[in-house]
Length: 371
Image (cartoon, rainbow, N blue to C red):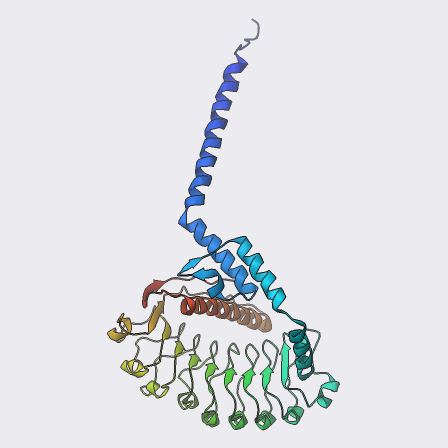
């Protein structure tokens, strides 16, 4: 008995596959057209374009008109070309002169400040970032012309009392270090306007002496362990921006309305269960951001569309901390996460404040922040 041989027409198989290929190509074309018309795809393109513009320092008013984003690539090229033309020789010369009064230092190979710095007492600005420096020397008191101390993202664990001798100091940024306290002598820097102590993780209080800082308009103490709003902060009569998010607040003080100039108040990621009625007495408050997951009571007037206040209730997703055996690595990971969270929220708030048309009350905005 011989083998059975199956005989078939190859043209039939070929026709079958050609039909399948045509159907698949038609589906691909239809899917591409659907994505092109999809609102989600358009939103993604707009956000990518906005991110690129922000990276290049382009003001939102240039690319956003009446709430619509112009994602034209030619627009971005035009903006870049104009910005290059604006850099005249005169401005370059001015930048060169100003750099003589600015000290910049970065890189993890730096574990202490260079010895030569002590002789440059004419400096007006220090920008020391992303180093392994732990100590700010006491000779800082010699820099009487100091206006800006930018010391963010280092390993600083202590600020010297001599910092109080910097009478012309206007900005102090010691965010994302390892500070556990702030020297009370800082209260002698009577011209200070901006104070940023965010991301130190272990700060629990600010000295009462900081009540003397009547020129301060900006305070950021987020990502620490404050259980209440510091008394000294409530006495900063010109305060316009207060960020105390990512702390352990259970409630707000009844005299919160002492901050009559307050315009922006960030409270998200705390343990608040209610908002006091006294918030309504802050007539200049235009933006209030809280975590909505624990709130059970709030003044109904906060949601009144007739008020200028933009009340944003953020229902953010909790992030579980991954514990490491190495404590230092866990600390770095936590600071990185807090920094990412902060930058994301900063971009969101800037977008919210710059938009010409924005809802006065947002009931649910869900974000999942992960590194």
